[in-house]
Image (cartoon, rainbow, N blue to C red; front, side, top):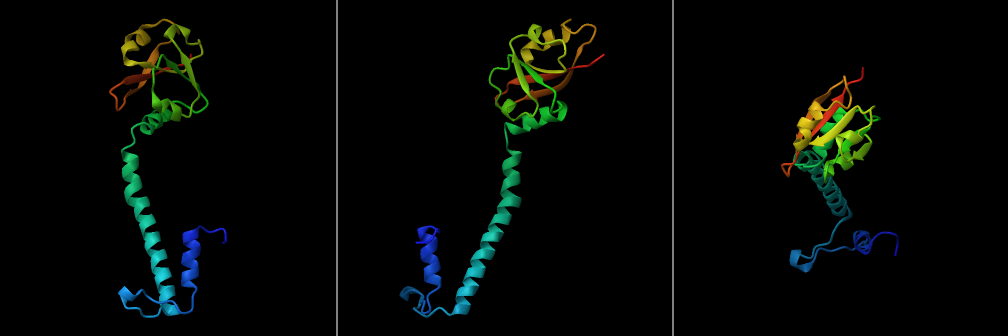
Length: 162
């Protein structure tokens, strides 16, 4: 048997016979070579149409229902790819796996290095992030607020350079 699967091999053998006939319950007539060619062309054309329909009708609908990656795209739009994003006690945020910027995890705002440009915190720590003197005289600016499908809210801040 060739490298094809058993069903494909059987189908190929079946279509290559000289005296191929329809089953008795479909009339029992013989298949001409021309009829076989048209059937193969029709099956290929229908398969291509089904794949095109799936690509243009189903895939966009699935993408619009994404729950996780859309948040990563929002963060990617704000944080440059080569700039680390510090995540301050983020708990479990699945979209962080899809963010292109390198993620550095810290427990508190005080653990953030002085050269931090972007950091992500939970909403309960927003007030602390806005009032910290960690980067004095610079102040962090809110650049993105994300509320995910679980109703957890996180905020991305940017610390401007002098």
